[in-house]
Image (tube, rainbow, N blue to C red):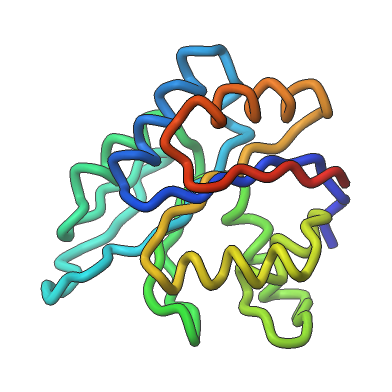
Length: 172
């Protein structure tokens, strides 16, 4: 399905921390088309009022609407998925294509979701995939940067200066 990739994945406790990290990567010159973010509209009793895609821009109305709306100015591609076992999530960046590929190709890896299958397909080991899925279930945010070994190392150095609870490099 997808070719193996070099990637760095960071876990953030809050949307504000994840958004700050995206801004730091942008300021450092990292290619925003090689960046994906995944998260939930957590601890909300509100219902999604609307979601639509207009070209490369998304409007998402919900508790974290301002957060997601701000990120879509930086990140290309977006989708809203309801993943069994995880719940409703919003995804921005190339990870959208990898999830769709996992769903269309029925690339099910024992015990992981479509997000897990997408991450596994780009070379992230299954034990790390399970950790990332658990983080999403716990209402955390994932930031995935991919590219050449040099690009990933550049992103890692930036991400390690942010408020990520964990940052891991995975070489495809």
